[in-house]
Length: 228
Image (cartoon, rainbow, N blue to C red; front, side, top):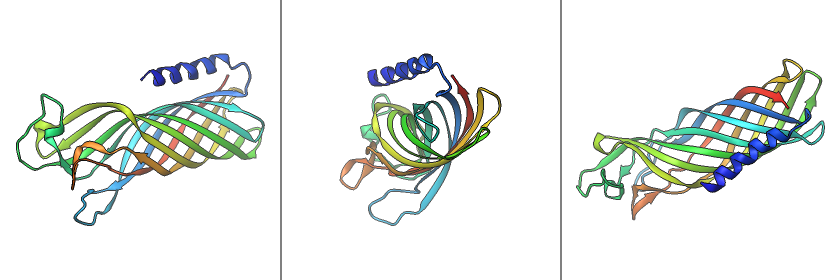
């Protein structure tokens, strides 16, 4: 958590330091298609599924030159997977922990994540009004909590996690359109070709506790970019 506070303060200090149009701050809404499995059992085949989730982000960008830029920031998303797996009620923390033998099956699992992206971009089209760019990026993902919904409502709820869930590697394509001297409309589409997550300690697998609910995503970002 100290690392999160430090990175957040660093972002705000960078924005306050910016004195030219090389620095830009954007606020973005991020609708996302999350690709996952309808279940993750070891004994049968599973089917692909997608869920629409929505996140938000604040990004600081620095233009190295007319073509190259780097950006970093902080984002939040509640990433829901509609997937059926066995919940291990004995592994839950009190007061919902239970050692009964009923089979508790999840209806959905929602990972509430703070992300810290670092992106490198290249403007392959750049005019006074319009830019089109490609990006590649890395994101460290910190899991705040996980919300479970199941066939036994007594076990439903959000459970605190507070650890690094994993990381994402992305590629993307986007555009900026100049609205005024200092404002631009920005949009981009990015795909996580690698999205690593830790195993979920409250989900049962064939050997006992812990099952990795692997997934990746396609994210659309739309927002406003302000020159500093």
